[in-house]
Length: 360
Image (cartoon, rainbow, N blue to C red; front, side, top):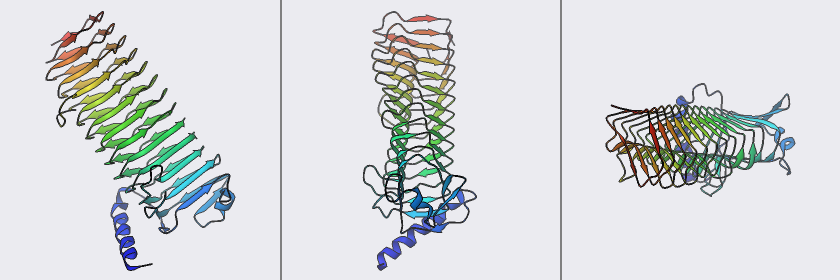
């Protein structure tokens, strides 16, 4: 090992030690920085092979990988597991400096079911912190710290029935939590998703629950959905994001957006500064019971053929232009909302129905 490499490892270990206090009770770590882990349930390095390694144990048919520090040396994923159906738990590990290649991550699962990723620190990776790819079902990602990655903190692609909860996902370059495509029936709850470019971004997915997340100080938007249907977005907080609090965009139908707090968004970018924006053919959505206040331009904006939506029982306060604004959007029902120091306006619309709104 040459002198520069030794110095680099020392610097990285000092960095890890500096972030250990935020993990809590971290337990005993084994310095495994020179040896990333690769397991393929259908290959020669399967779980039978893994059980013989010093970093893996098996108790009551559950495999454990725990208390490790692993560097990917910017060459590969730190922990990669493929083609697995067994129950396994990755717990209390620090993984960092994974490869910057497009599909790599601190922890990467590919075609994996029944995994639990718990209490890990997956920060300072050169692509994603945690990545689930290609038919990963029934996995739990909980109580992890995923910060300062180059790309997304937590990334899912073509994965269903997973739970992502109680994670701190902050200050990642691209997005905090990013579902790329065909991710259905997942639960995203109680996560803190702050200071990313985009907080939570979901693309082409259905029947998910997004609840009780905090999305604050993200550079562009707190939450963005594209081509998404039949999702429930409830009891989240989106505040102080650069442009929109919540952005529902491009053919999103039959979603429920209820009981969220959306406040103080906008002010750092040139235009499109809203609390909640539905844009481009977003139909049959229900927006109800939200507290939407002090956003830069509009509270709620329906734009460009967003039709047959229900906007009801929202508390909308103090916006510079309007509380509710409709542009080229038709046949919407706007009822029983309270608007304070802002009003309602429609432009180039037909058949919208307004009733029992209290404008103060």
